[in-house]
Image (cartoon, rainbow, N blue to C red; front, top):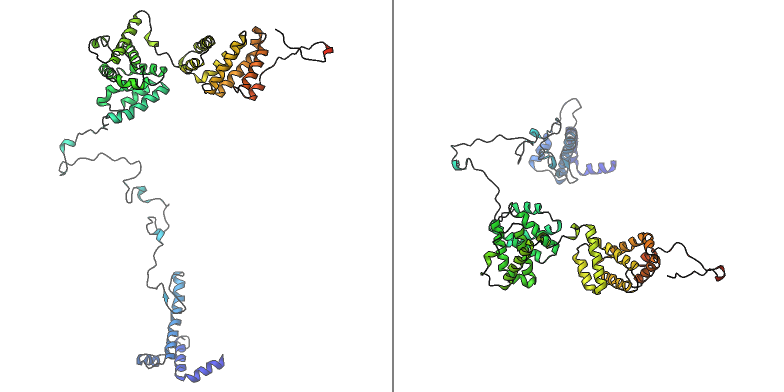
Length: 474
């Protein structure tokens, strides 16, 4: 290393002197005197320095900048300037340090004081109307305000519901009536209609309900008659009812296309409305001699006949009959027994299916299965045995009686067979045969067949017969 330096100094004697001056310029401890760099400054201003001297000058500037960087780094904790290997200044020292971007819109104190709560208790800031829970006093109206209007000072604003047109009326009221057929609560229907602005469509409510009931079951027609009786007064007037039935009589020619028995059914609705005092007694008489449509005449004649029969003791209130869920249990059992007896006499399984469906008690069909099997156990001969099997097979194939209801009916017979055997000594034997035949016809499954109870005690022949089971003889 020493030989290299000596060779370089021999080649550049002037620059060597300058280098010595530069080193002496940085020493301030020898006697406390500064050595001037006059010769070097003259050389730089005179522009006669060589390229090697320029390199020395740049090296001296870099060294000075590094010393300044070390001083600033101790003050600013590493936020000062830095120099790259090429001498380029990175992030200049003249830029004022700023806070991070995440804290640019921070409203908290920079001093670290306070409890970290928002300013003004949350009442300040852009888009804030005030502290939560704060109640404003009523603002006084300035009469000198150019926008002041004396006519609007005592105005009362209310929510306005626009009246329903014909298209919106059907879309809104039809679901209400259909839901009423499920729950049967007339008060709920009255509340829902009171919230609507029916306007001129108010008289269309009874006609819409009756037209929907014509295509429904008998129990739904009974519910419709009750609904009309409860709506007359609180929601609808008597004049609305008369207009609605007038419309039904005019549209009977169209209703017959969908419901062939519409004239008789509308006549029954009119008779029930007169009986419930929804329509006046002179309503039917007002149409005498004024009706040209044959369907309208048939409806009015039907209503007049029913009203005359009511004077003789007929109760029009029960003309539709009650729904299955509203009938007493004993009445349902009695009707099922009558249905079975009628089927044994006529042998018409389709009529039996229709009658069972009209009872509208799918949750009570297990009682029908129970009564049918008990009738087989108590009967004499094979006619009832075979006819009941055919009926249960037909009801099972058409899904009128579900698998669960069929299974429950058989299980009820299994539980009561001991009591039935007291009155019918052959009950166990007949039940085993009936269950085996039901399994072979696909009415029940193998699990239900295996649950069939057997006689608990068997009688044997004499010991010499080898323990052969003795067949029942009756």
